[in-house]
Length: 120
Image (cartoon, rainbow, N blue to C red):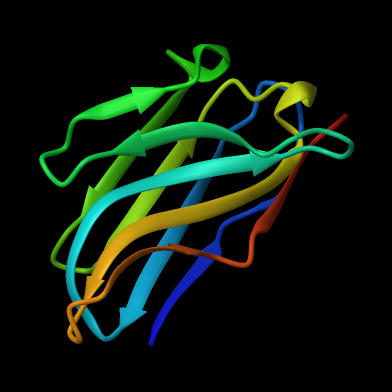
C-alpha cells in the first residue's frame, strides 16, 4: 500500500557531507511526522531527526548543528542533509513516516535503509 524508498547513502571522508532522500508513494491520504533513524553494527536503532507536518524539527544531541532535516509535502519526500560527518555517524539510515492511507488506516512505515560509511 505504502512504500518508502531511501537514496543518497555512500562512502564519505570525515568532515564531508551527504544528502539522504526518502520518497513515500502508494495509497497516501496524509503524511504526519517523518523522520530518520540509524542503526550502527551492534547498536540499537536510534532517532536521528524528525519533522512534523507543521515543520517542527527534533534532533538527536549528537547531530545537532551538523544535520538538517526537511520535507517537501508536495512530493511526499523527506531529506537529511548531513554535514561535518564523523566516523561515529557510520550506520544504516532508515526513513520512517506516520501515514494515513486512502483506506484511512494510519500506521508507521519504514524504508529499507541506506548505508552511510564515514571513513578515510
